[in-house]
Image (cartoon, rainbow, N blue to C red; front, side, top):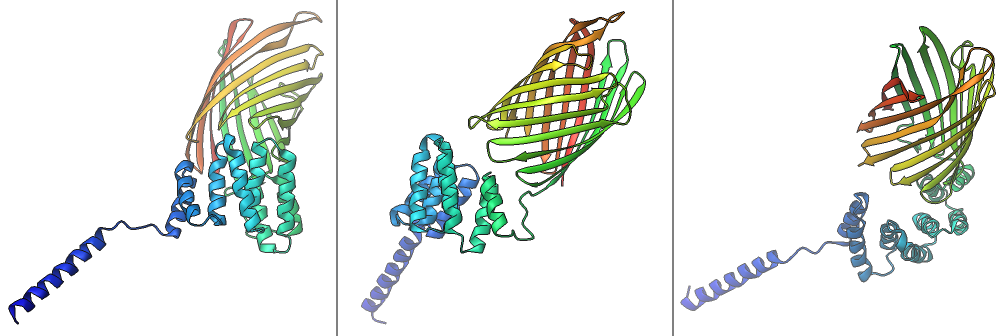
Length: 399
């Protein structure tokens, strides 16, 4: 090979080598699929701001990408002050793709954040009509409505389009709760309660339970059995009922009935009205109940006012309050107390009132989605004298 030919070969080799190195050094540009997949994962992990930035990059390339519009809309829903921005994203997506079920869910949620419940209801009806000719899309829309607590719409779509036989709205619809309670009285007597409650929740708006509860006091044992149910009409109105029955007339009521109506006045404030009706051998205790619960995420503060007549027709008034802080959805700690009166017999036919006060602390820990543990410690005073120390331990198993 001639010298100049060798030089040409070396120059060509070097050019190829360095061009390859430069090509290798260039940053890899994420594909559309990469960006959308990463944004969805960030949303699921709760990093809405980071996900929104990725959706922004997609929409800069294509402002009519309905998936990116809907994804960005759900990111913005995490901040109530940006509900209007989220609503615009969902509206744009629905205009571009009228059968996009997620867009209607997003619009309805945004309207609720803005306090426009009637508009949210109208949007969900628009979604039903837009998807009416597509059974698969309608069933998917029903599933989204269940997930987002739009219960009346979900029930209506289920009625029009029979759900798939294998549909599971609740991952673990059964749960069993076992508790043991021991109270040590000032006179060294012991009160105890063992309870087992089995609950079934086939849908997010409906649950029912059955309970068995042996109770021991004053060296005697009574047995209570009962059942209850709860129904959520929509996000705001709930109805519950619990009934207990005893096998004999004793220190426990022969029967007890507890109806309760709950209404969400605001997004995080729930009001309740109910009754506690208990039948004893010598008459009925008739108590009314008014309560309020303020939520902050999973944590809450709760107060109840209870008043009425006991089974010997004496006035009863009580105040009960408690609060609970939940961390990471796994650990919870709570505190509470009560203040009220209870009727006590005197010699003869007259009655007197005893002041009853109590405090308690509760702890619970979710080990995994299947098992949770809890305990409660408390103290009660009557007429300012120590009356009993209370200990409760329990577990919940989901399956």
